[in-house]
Image 1 (cartoon, rainbow, N blue to C red):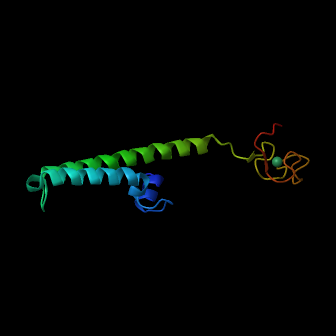
Image 2 (cartoon, rainbow, N blue to C red):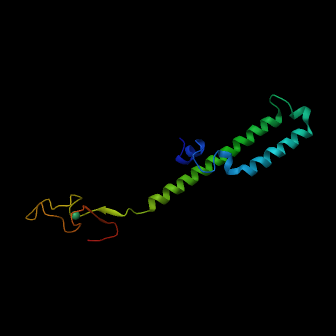
Image 3 (cartoon, rainbow, N blue to C red):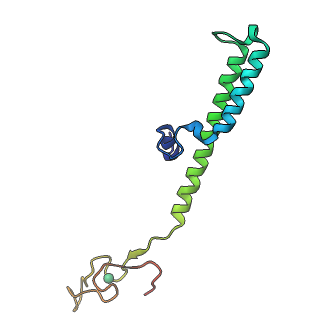
Length: 127
Ligand SMILES: [Zn+2]
């Protein structure tokens, strides 16, 4: 299952565009080195069809993409963990359970004095 970041990358939703935009220089250096190897042995590695060099190229590209996906998965996990560590700014009022009013007793129906009728209090506030 793709993470949110992996989906964003695959859909080209991020500012730097396509997946290869994150490693454009390294990609270009690799492709140019590949081209130089092909030029050294044009009969064995050049031309159409599957050659040992094209097989290696496919494996290298698959490795690159797998590493990229693993990196995005780790980044996504850290982002989710960081979000989970942020405490919410408010919590439900312990006195009225969010109703904002007294529910029982002689003050039934009156505004809750703990939350002033809001039903919530600041998260760090103690009773
Ligand atoms: Zn309350």
